[in-house]
Image (cartoon, rainbow, N blue to C red; front, side, top):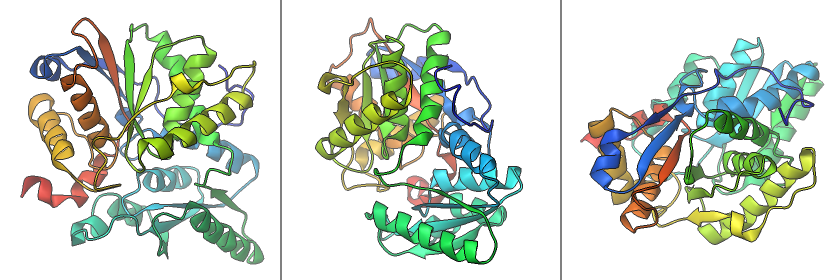
Length: 331
């Protein structure tokens, strides 16, 4: 594997399966739709974060850490999975909840991911801003210093762009896994938020010589802001690995038509996508990531982006527990 020289702690159940969405393909009347089931990675409801965290926890174990610190939104899949990984490895864990999504019902704060993190015994902190990645990271590092003064060995899993995206290595692995599964793909669709999954997947495919386009559906920021982030992050990942490759502007495909009114908020496209997947495929996607990604894919198909002869692969990156924080979907 391309990532063999990096410390890694096995957390995800892989390879994950690929299956065809027959009913959704027929209903949308476009290309064949296939799905990569990374919602089935197995760690506390699974999802893409299990792959990413293998490399952070590889470092944490190497450093003999006994406390994990991580920041994210209230309904963060990343934090929920990190709590599960820490508990599995016998570590304490502290999570920092950022106020990213205003005006949500009580269920948003009490059920889904927050409930699961409480169940697993995480210690909670709060950060008042929702769009301040560096400030949120700084608060974690300040807490790490406090823990060190008490004789603890903390390990911080950072969020901001200035840190090396170690988690992207999990999706370099996924790219190699995809190629070994021998599905001819004409396009890949994935949610694009922090960019960790998007960048790792794109980097791995290009290093292996695979030119299939990867479409990132924006879930947190507009496509122009995200474009700079993905290009920078992908090149950093490529530079971490063997060889001499360059990411090109034409490698970056982003779509933000289903983003408004912003991160974690429903809109008509996302609501339709979530309900259609559930009612026609028995497939559960969340409002924050996979629901928006599916909505973006559906809009691209309806606009004629893909022909009926093509096969497109939808990356199901998990996030199912967040559904419980959005009771309006069934009210």
